[in-house]
Amino acid sequence: MERAHRDEVMIVTGASSGIGAACAARAVGAGYRVVLAARDQSRLAETVARLGGGDRAVGIGCDVTSWDEQQSLVDQCLERFGRLDVVVASAGTNARMGLLESTPEAWRSVVLTNVLGPALTVRATLPHLLDRGTGHYVFIGSLAASGRLPGSVYGATKAAVASLAESVRAELLSVRQIPGIRVTLVELGAVATAMTPADRLPFTALGPDDVAASIVDAVDRPDHVGVDRLVIRPAAQQL
Image (cartoon, rainbow, N blue to C red; front, side, top):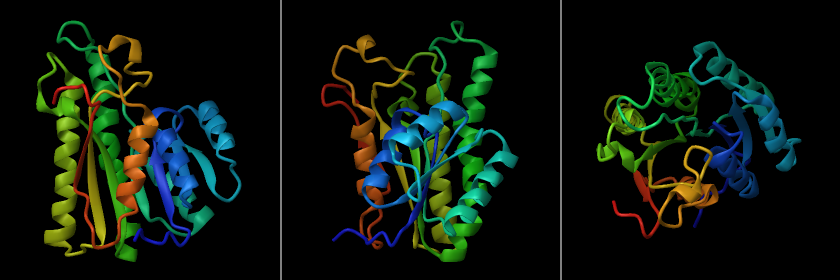
């Protein structure tokens, strides 16, 4: 049986579009109250409006590379809903492949958003999950972390995300001995988003909702079930 939600609250970063927006929509449909966080506040407001807003979904502007804004995000979540149960660290960005085709400035943005961002998300939310002794972290990784994409700094950041997920799980289990806070790393193949247009791929890519459905399903597993790692890819994409 799936776990009863009991009005559980989920924070989703990078929620104005793509996987984050799809995850928020799936979560609201499954009965969660959802805090959507993103930098683009106009698109964020549009996404929240599509979800009905009100007491089920609220949008909060947040740059995940800012510690102050991440703290404010959590504070506003608790002020609005009084609790926090699930954290989906979905905010991410990309840069052109090729060590001479992209720029150091683009690399800086990718590293700060994709690595520092989820680390700060954990730092801002962990005290509140520890207080409850239960909860769930979801990290969005990538099969690009294998290093097979030529000149991909993005892939390197996703390798760091995978390491961060394992490190968080190790601290929760080995140091704090709190198995009630679960950790799931979602390793993705090609997903059709603004970063990866579908017409550039030689096969049918995943859609954001394909990923979102699997994320919400993993979070909804009974409390004693840990879905540590999900690999989701187009059926025609080689690993």
